[in-house]
Amino acid sequence: MRVTIFASVLVSVGAFTVVPSNRPSVSLNAIDLDTTQLAAGAAAIALVGAGAAFAIGGKGAAPEVVAEPEPEPEPIDISIPYDAAILLAYDAWRVEGDRGDFDQSSYEKYKPAYISKAIAEVTLKKATREMALL
Image (cartoon, one colour):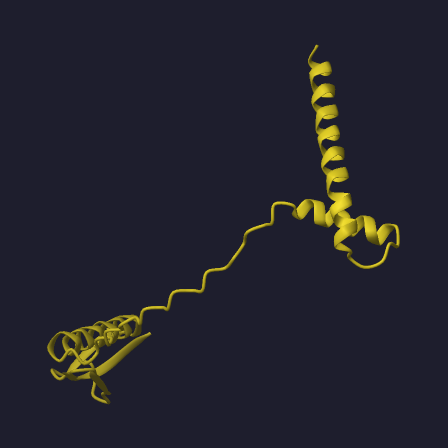
C-alpha cells in the first residue's frame, strides 16, 4: 500500500508529526512512501529524539541507587551435643517400651549400654567387611 504524505515533519525532542496530504503525488510538497518505510522512519526519529534528550538534559537517566548496608545476621547455634544420638535412642527406647517420661538416672544407666552396643555393632560390621575381602 502506498501513502502520499505532505512533507511536513516536525522533529523536536520526542515529537514527530506526519500530516497526510490530499494533493496529487506530482506535487513538489509531497513524498510517496510505503507504510513500512513510514513506520521505520517514525521509529528512527523517535529514537534519535529520545537519545538527544538523554544526552542533552540527562533527565531521562535513571537515578543513582545507593544500597543501604544490611545488618549483620544474628549467629545461629547449629552445634549438636556429643551424646545426641544416645539421647535420641533413649527417647525411642522409652516410647517403644512405654517407660514414661525422661528420667536422668535412667538415662545415665542407658548411656553406657548404648555405647557398648554401638561399639559391638561397628566391630561386627568391620569384621564382616574384612571377611568378605578374603
